Image (cartoon, rainbow, N blue to C red; front, side, top):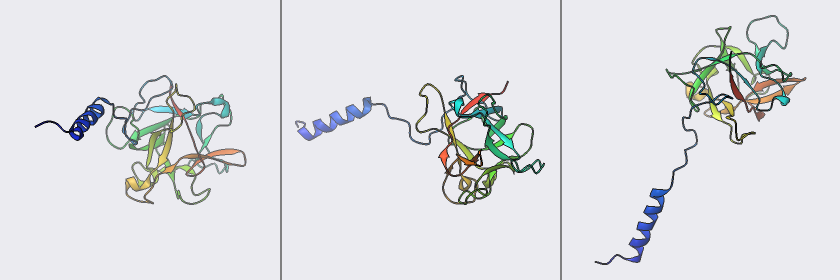
Length: 204
């Protein structure tokens, strides 16, 4: 039985697809890298800041209302580009040696036992601002690191944070991009606004 033209075309299509590489799917688990190209360790201290430091310094904790309280503190960007900000730990839910994208984690301060949280991601400021005072592995502290969709520098690994409370058992069934929200000269991190692109820098 002679092969038909249709079967010959089908064979060519199979051959073409078999020799083509399949691009990674969105949301795949990839290693997270710091500014030096090293893998970011799970539950280790790092500072995070913008790709272009002329646009401000690193992320830090501050009491913008000067209440003299330890918690909750607001998570903000230091206005001075020479400041790297505070150090934070990014702890995956589950034992892993290195940080992975699209995996649920909690973000803690190195000198405090509390974690970043958002009270109401669908509300306006100040309820949707990122603060401290949360507990590990809860809906209020449910974040993930993802690759920044359009990096400022193709030579550098840059990322953004998403807040996904539903992945930890509560809240609206969606993820919110952690963004920069400015009020009275202070750049807060919040659940609405322009997504904040950042890089990891290992603590010395």
